[in-house]
Length: 91
Length: 289
Picture 1: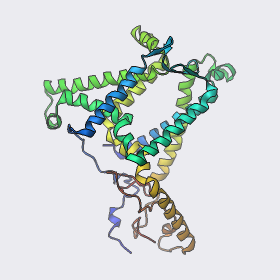
Picture 2: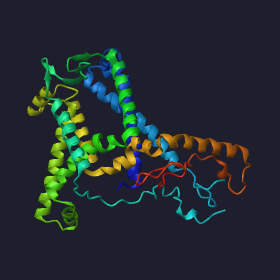
Picture 3: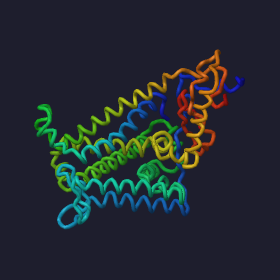
């Protein structure tokens, strides 16, 4: 059974993983990673296509994970409800 | 003002208070028509997955999404990056048919075809084979560590790991020629990236099918969540959100708790609690549905 912390980790990593899959699919359908090697910054010189795909995927995953982490943080640190009202009670 | 229900609220300090600590589930072996169907689905689908990678067609691998060469071979067909539109259309058709068949006949996908279901079934078979039936497994878990327990548990994990690694290998074999991939592994000359993908996929298989199991459906699967909200309940949830915005706009601020006037889109009383544990993202975090 996941603990809350474990759940938070899953909530950060899992949606960003799904988003990274979609983003990689769309991005690399349009952009050949070899382009990064040939026309990109010097950092990517000698980059294999396979490495380009993997790094691209990991990059998208990391970006998505940051977004998820901020979302989880904002939800977890939201203020408690007022003490006099249950959440489903009509106002 | 009702105060009786307040004590059941999760505070922000313990946002996970409503995740009931689920005990480990020991699935019992069952028989019947639907189980036979499910077993047939497992055999057919996994047979396709593990088998198709080795099928050749006109001198090349029949199904090869050759990423290093940027072309997809699907039997006689070769797709280039500019044919991406067809892949997108295929994905749209797949998504629509998923909803269509679910509306028509229930959660066929979840029960018979979802990779999570299929691999979990396979892993449970291994578990039954090494550790025995439900009661035996429960007894084994409670028993002290003996040589026999070590043997049973160890062989289970060894088989799981072998299967997971082979699954990862097969998966990567759809993206680079599986025969040369196998040769590279045999000669221990596999590049870092193929190894990374094989281990990542193997790790995911081992963790999802061996340990997470139904937790994936309960906490991770977006599709299960769609099913809970349901096509009919979704507009109702939107309706209640709009209604609460309207209420906020019309009501004066309550001095005791200004918080009460902040809108909450949580209220979706129409949503049925069909899953054992469902999450509803209120502004206070998840709670049991």
